[in-house]
Length: 213
Image 1 (cartoon, rainbow, N blue to C red):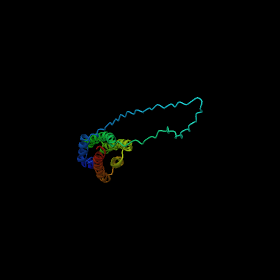
Image 2: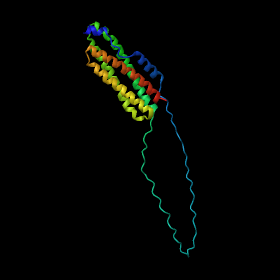
Image 3: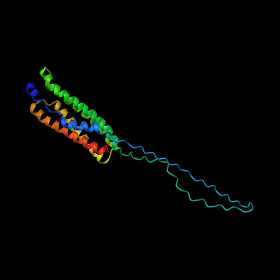
Image 4: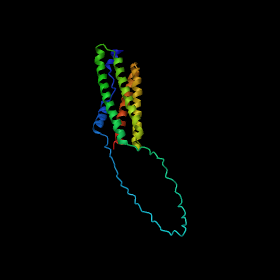
């Protein structure tokens, strides 16, 4: 079985998709954030009260007290934090760059599995380790997206949500591939893994366009 498996080296990571993501992540920096500072100098005009002299021999009529105004509330209303899509994307972008590096390493490991198997190493174990690496790396990326998506809104939030789904698909399918040893099932799963990677590449590009500008 190992000999048959070795002859069919699986195409786990579509290189075109990875190159596309690599170009995107290398050339698409996070948008610079503008620090807006407003200085307002308020000077309260103070008008001295006019003092009215009255005769000691005449009683002074008491003036009616002005209607009391409701005391200003001392409660501070906490405003909801505003969305910062570029900052969120900057964090996700860094995570995606790390993920791309892990994918590249896994791709090299997969390529070496054939040579290692010819030297006597178990091919299934070799491939399983590469699958595990990718699944774990996708999990780290998903955690990064989870931690930043709350800072976003609009089309950026929608794009990151879809990217998160794409990462989850990779987590699940690569973890499933670790325990899949049947050749026919593995071939079917390899096709799904390739689709997962292409979908991830597409959603990364979409998220960059939606969030970085």
